[in-house]
Length: 235
Image 1 (cartoon, one colour):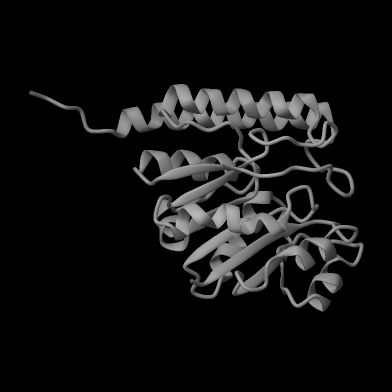
Image 2 (image 1 turned 120 degrees about the vertical axis):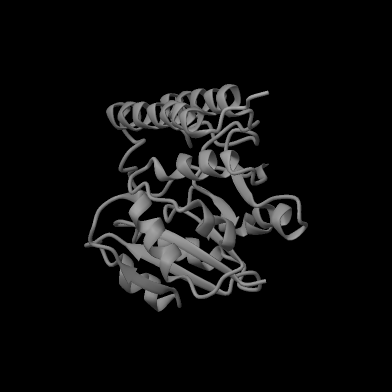
């Protein structure tokens, strides 16, 4: 099975070497680092570690993921992973197992289903993730607990979803479109640790609230958009 790992980065020089070193080499076919104009040497470190480095000057987490997805070399499965070492790349087998065993089309690593460091996730970030997950359960019937960035999907499924969100809404778009299309979305518990370096979004209450509002709005909008476009059943 060909596995492409995509890692969006922006000034992750302190962490990227550890992230790349911990990826199980026997499970990964290629590693693509998509960098958004880092100024701290992230690109050079990633290239030296053997990653394929792409530069994406347009800002946006989703845009970086989409750029990496478009550049992946004929993968069977695509893995998305942050470059801050908060998730553990060594747990890649846990993430891939439901897909390789034929039980899932998309897998999500939940940071809230396993014991984690008390300082790894600020309370407001954990609250926002639980709230979003609960809203997804109510509106879409999908039992998840988190919207974590450590995730994987069969390449043909990801292409079929026609993902297009260019900001942090990209992560929830995959879940919503996958569920609405009838694909199997499975959650697995993963470890979570304090990130190396400062978060660009969740490190502040303002950033978390802004991202949370956008994501919650997206969840509701997709639900009602789907209801409007779904053919009505007439007797």
